[in-house]
Image (cartoon, rainbow, N blue to C red; front, side, top):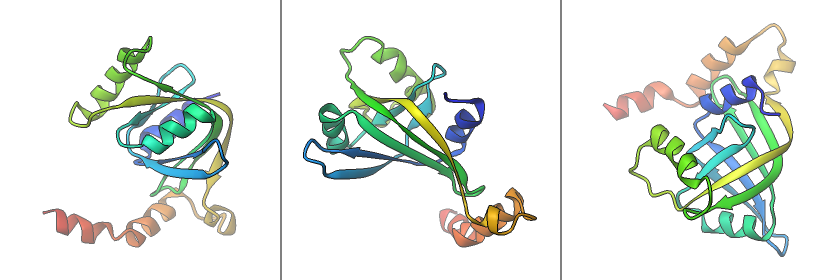
Length: 157
């Protein structure tokens, strides 16, 4: 279900948003910075500081994940089931190694959230439909201005 296009989009997205629901129906949406496709059909998210997300998943496995490349303004919504993998679980160390290769060992990974997709839908900015003669390059130009990339680049120096 995780196609090459979806996996590539995961790799190009800086943040994802994970929505979970508590046992009493209270929604929670939390940004996640460290996430990846495991190459086997699941999406892994490093739980660095999200006790509410982990607790919700342990009580209710339903989850929704979205990620968008903010410059191209395209991404995907993934609806599926989630589990929380802890350090003593089988396969944890292999999954953790993928995150260590990606983000280093600076951030403590408390657990790993594994999403098994049930459905995946593309997210596309309305401007693609409203202005069909324009393309990704136009979206990138607009996003660079909207996100004030030059201003932040100067601040970072």
